[in-house]
Amino acid sequence: MMKILIISACLLAVANSVSLAGTRGAGDADVTSLVHDVRELLEQARKGIQSDDLEEEALNIASAARDILNKSQVKENGEAVKKLLNDVAKTFQGDKSSSALFDGPLGFDEDNLYTAFQFLNGLADKAQQLSDAAEPVQDVVAAIEKTAKSVADIVEDIENKVVDYRASQHGQGSRSLKARGVSVSISVKCCGKK
Image (tube, rainbow, N blue to C red; front, side, top):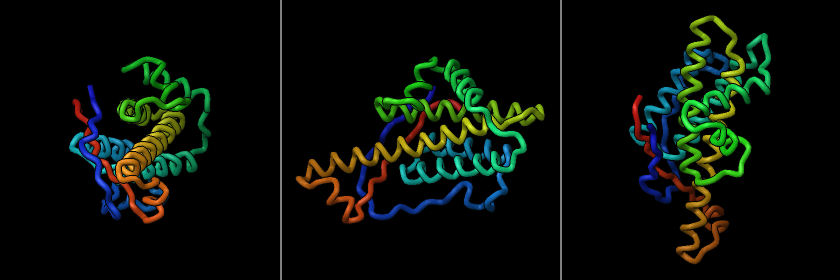
């Protein structure tokens, strides 16, 4: 079972990162590379990853998923995507996790990030299974896209809360910190089995 631990929060002006999907050209995404990118992201999270890098990688995964969907002859079915997400949710927390993550209201952000990682793990397994069986993958790819976007949103929410907290501790408004170009990078570590 994975747990998300916020290790530390620090104010950073610039964060350097290496993109998982950055070596692949636009439009080169396929299900195998998408699953690989999800697995790499989850592995980085197990070792510890900066929030800026996590957000960027999640958006890269969402973009790769969108590229796959744009190339597909078959369009994703919104209801089938919802059902798939609920089916994956049942494997670890039940239907409540799907509703909380995608329909709001968002609760404790670390719990939502933990849930999103579990979704990505389960969806990557399903995508690989469908791809190996030469079955349609558009719904699971759409679910990966939606989940990856949720990861980026959660990370942004956490960063904003840290900026607000730090600003209140220093007697400054969070707008003044953001206006000065101060950003927050949080170290995130996801613990658990592969």
